[in-house]
Image 1 (spheres, one colour):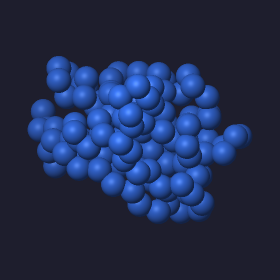
Image 2 (cartoon, helix red, strand yellow):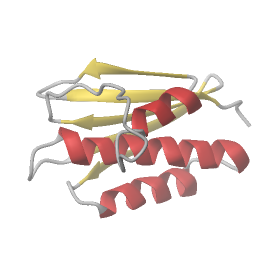
Image 3 (tube, one colour):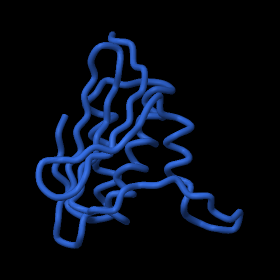
Image 4 (cartoon, rainbow, N blue to C red):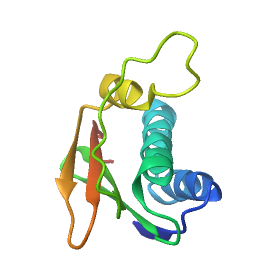
Length: 124
């Protein structure tokens, strides 16, 4: 699955709906994947692509893994933070680290980066 999404808050829900509707996921895997993809898209919207630029979401399932990638045109690399207990933001990458089997950042063709996560997802 590959989606091009506008830099708009509704894109988070559109990505999540496409993931859960098209990838045949169920149960805990479905919920975890949806949460992780929501975090990646939200980060791309808040900190990644400049206004007017799209983000690209790619999801693949193969060899017992689900891999989700979010590309944006921003140069700022994601970094886990240690928010104060009263902060309303800043916990997304801690959540990604806790729930994903692996995650990272890679360059993409053109400006920006690709943030990816993998989950163990036995083929059906």
